[in-house]
Length: 252
Image (cartoon, rainbow, N blue to C red; front, side, top):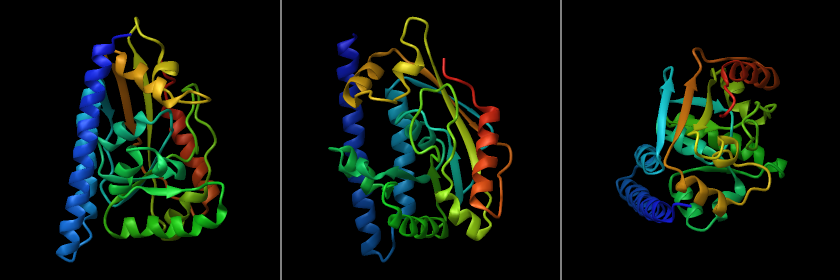
């Protein structure tokens, strides 16, 4: 274990996260004093922070295709918390996250300050409010990103999609953009399935320490060539799943 590397990177990431929280909070406060919402400021802050953190982590990013222009709905397969940094570094957006993240120490405060939307998938009555919140984000000219698999995976396949969050796109007849993510590690490192993908009963702290100890890794983000539209959310989910599955590459 390269502990000096882990410590230096952890300190650097903590500093960036703290600065991100201050910038997002202060920018939002100033905007409100001026009678504005400050939403676009927060998405810009998050994109810049993601770029910096990806560099600190040793992430070598390869992007294929063109990212969508806001406002947009973008879906992707889901392998790790790293996905948020990877996608966030390339598009200005608001993510939809599982509800428990907002209660995580430090991270919860930061993601709340960035305008992240939180969903408790086990409580169905929260879905209508989430749909409304997504529509408000889109109407404000920003992008929404979420992972319709609903959970992370080991990187060998794309799990079936849950269609519920596609409702705003169906209602407004808005096309949905898609992307796929995958990772590769160096020969001397653990395979990406264990070192980068975060799934099953993996513990967050031990996983991120292991990740920060690596000299670096490759992250690939591939945007789909054409957005997909459908009049039924289940049909839309199936088409998006097929499109991502076609371009997805298993981790290595």
